[in-house]
Image 1 (cartoon, rainbow, N blue to C red):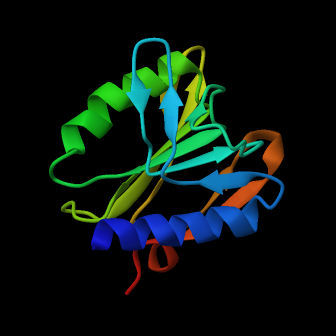
Image 2: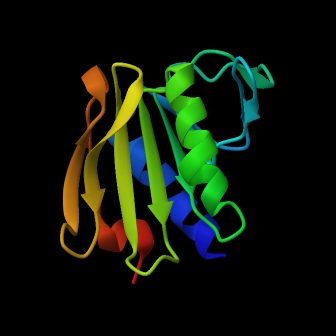
Image 3: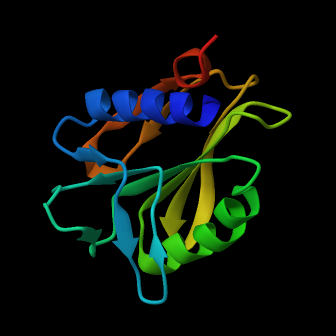
Length: 142
């Protein structure tokens, strides 16, 4: 339940902060060697096609115990290779509740910022699309 709660919170925050873009869930992204279904994807245009074929501007994965390694290792590398501009990883059940934003630079992700107890309020620049303000309380709730 916590996984879905965090995903919905982030979808609402992204939609408000980036009104010219589309926030989608329950979609699949076809890459060269794999097919992925991120928890959320932010795209320029939400076509009615079943598969995204263009790299999303950003994808969000909310970690759960059963997908943790997949999200942190395999998807991380595959999204970078596919050209996804930002990869957001939310960890609602970790030792330290946190969200880390990675940004693509020279074909690899680098950590852009972390939202956690030490940084409970941040602003995430999303290229020319705008800035997404985040607070720990809004993303993870009470």
